[in-house]
Every structure is written in C-alpha cells, then in structure tokens.
Image (cartoon, rainbow, N blue to C red; front, side):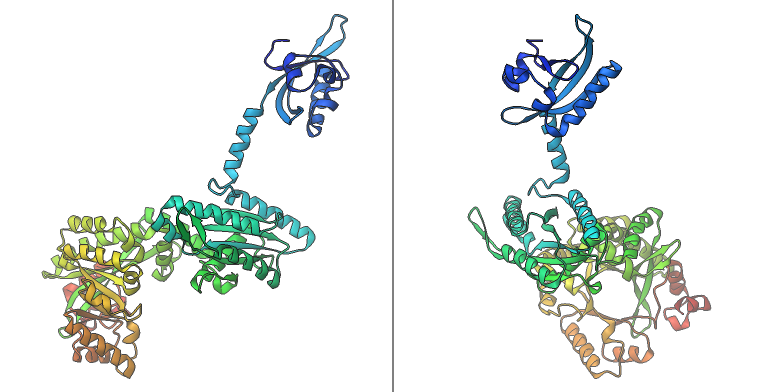
Length: 557
C-alpha cells in the first residue's frame, strides 16, 4: 500500500483515517493532517453525503462499493473514484479500506466533450442546443415571476462578401471579434449563442417593453458598426436585428427563435442596420408550409410531381409552335398543390435543383413524342429558377437532358427572369454564353416587371422576350399598357428578338397583338396548361383551342 500508485486509506468505523499511503500524503496533505475525519477534512462538501452513504452501505452489507468524489488538495480539488471495502482487523473489529484512482484526466475529457456538444467551436459561445435549454429556463422563471423577456436574432450584414473576397480565415476572425463585442455589450444574466453562419441569438430576461428593446438592440447594432481590423484589412459589416417577445408572440423556445429570425430577415429586407420587432406581417413560411416542405421530399420519392404543357401559338396562323412546361404537384390528400405554394419552398430548401433537373429531362423527352404525333418540328420552353441558374452543376444538367433526349439545342428555350440575371451580371453573362454554345435559346420571362434594365438585351445572348400578362390583361382598352407593348415589340424588332405575349384570353387581345407584329401568343384563349396526353390530342385534332373536341374543351374550362 505504501508504494501503490493510487491513494489508499484505512478507516475505522467512524470514518477516521488510521493509515494513508505515500501517494495520499503527497497529493492531499501532511501526514498529521490526514489523521482525522476523512469526510470532513478532505472531501468536497458537495460530495460528502455520497461518500458517507457508501461507507454506511459497506459496513451494513459487507459488500464493496464505488463512489466518485472530489478530494481537496492545497491547490484545488481532484476527482477520484473511491473503491470502499470492509475487512476485520486482528481484533475482529470491522474497518474499511479505501483505494482511490485519480479521475481528473477522464473528468476533464468528459467536461471538454460536454462543452463541445453545447458550444460553438469557433466563438466558444453556446450553440443551438444549449440555447434551447437556456430559453426553457428563462421561460420557467418568467412564468413564476410574471415578467416577459425578449429573444433577439442578430445577423451580420454583408458578411458573405468578407468570406468570398478575403477568405474564410478572415471571416472566422471577424466572427470571433463580433461575438466578443456582442458578449461585452450584454449583461451577465443574458445568454448569447451562435446558431450558425453569421447569426447570433441573444436571450434578454426582463427585457420586454419597447423602450428596453430599443435600448439593448441599439447597443448591439452600434457595437458592430465599428470597423474590424484583421491582418491588414479594415472590414465593415454591421448588423440587422429581429426581436420576438415572450409571451406576446410565442410561449415556446422554438417559436420564439423562429419569429425573431423572421423579424431579422425583415430588417435586412427593409434597409439593414436596424431592428424590427416581430409582427405577423413579417412572418416567414406559415406552419402548414413547414409541413408541406416535409411532404415534398416524400412526394419526390413517390413520383407525385408531374408536368403540364401550355401551347405557344403563332398569332397569325393559330398553329401550335411549342409548349411551355409547368410543374404540378398532385398530393394524395390535398389534391393539386398550386405552384405558388411549393415552388418558393423548393427554391429555399434546394429541392428545386432536383426537381428542375427532372423537369428539364422529362420535358425534352416529351417534346420528341409530341413531334412524332404532329410530324413537324416544335420547341419546348422550360423555366429555370434563380437557384438552378446559380448552381455550378446546371450546365451538366443541361447537357445530360439534351444527350438523353436527342433533342437539338435550338428546340429548347430556357426561360429566366430579369431579376435572376441582374443579381450577378458577370456570372449571368458567363453562363448564358455557355448555354448559347449549346444552341439553347434564352427567353426573358415576365419582361418589364423586374429590374427593367435594357443594357442586358445588348450584352446577353437573348433570343426571346415574354411580355408579362399584367401588360396584356387590359388590352386593347388601356393606352398605357398598349404603349408598353408597342415599345417592347418595336424594341424586339430592331434587336431581332422573338416576342411571346403571355396571358392572352380574348380574341380582341389576340387581334391587337397580331396587328402590331407580335409573333406568338400564350394564354387561356389558345389553351390552359394541360397534361401530356391532352396536349397530344390538341396536336392531332387542331391547332386552335376553340376548335378542340369536347374532351379538350372540358379540360380548358
């Protein structure tokens, strides 16, 4: 026992130390100090009940017991695993032998792992897991006290440019410095967490009035407005803040954070470097859309998405020249889900890349089948979403669709909105040029409703302009809409661009556009979006919707 690497004690029934090994003396105290009550003198107060219970259990059952306690040393406390056993001495009196193994390294490792599980590795702030726990604690206190509190989401403004322009090491340095500034601005009773990317969440107990929120968030915004000095760079980012209040807006931690995040998004959309307190009009996707998002992934696996085709007709001959492809979702219980509901969700969660690739391939294959029916050359028009257009793999998807279908590039029109092109004109010019090399034609969808910049008509390889239905709806009665349509048609003529007028619903609209040189029309007058089999019949029977058989007339109605 004298030479044992573990600490060893011999105790009598009251728990007094009769013997201590050299290791125990070296680690804990002098020999004189060790001859006393082990519990009272050398065990941390919080752990004394556990050791006392273990000693009593051993004396009663005569079976060994194990307990972990902190033994006090002159400098600090050290975790030990104590194995306690009972034996009879030479006088047949029960005594106890305590052998202790140093657990400090193991406990430090466990503590480090716990910290890693609950804290952000970059800033050392609490992560989302610990944040939820802290908010639940504040909710419990607020219910007892009757006091409200605020949750503030802080999003850095322009941080992506720092990462993209200066690299992630500089971006990480800015995040650490921002975290330190925010933490210094808040009270000790507040919680600051990093929940991912450039977003932080602050929990502010006792802060619920408009004046209190304005004061705190003003400080948060102000502290991030000063420049960050990283290496030789001077960096400005700033911050936008969104706030939700308990219990006014929500009574659970998940909803409070979600609403604060929605308000922060609103702050960024309306000028940045400001605070917005949550209001229902600032809400993100409603709860039923969140459920819908989960159902979309199932829908992909079950093949619930399908394509409809709307005819694009020659305004003079009334002959179908091609089709615009439109995606539909036939939900097993909800029925047909409107694209306005599921497309924005797919754009947000990235599912649009998968759906878009499928639609492009399916549409090009379907066009070949249409051509077999009508025995003439047609074209297919496919909408490309902003996220698809920015995807590095988009050109590969395009090549795959053309190769799989055997379709010529000239027969494929890719519809892109003005806004998509103007977000990053340099990238747009590069991608459009590569698309043109594949002979695919580019159409500007909803022309005139976006950025209304005419410079890209000269700069980009554009072939088709699609006049938005908002300029067609009131024709021929509206002089203003007529002036806009005439200007677009005249511009397209001089730039050698084709024009498709969308939303044509009356004969008067068709005649007005035809008289002014609009080549193609699209709308309910000549056919609503229809399934592929109905489009096949339209190609077989007629080129004009008013002459379709009763089967098709019902579809259009």
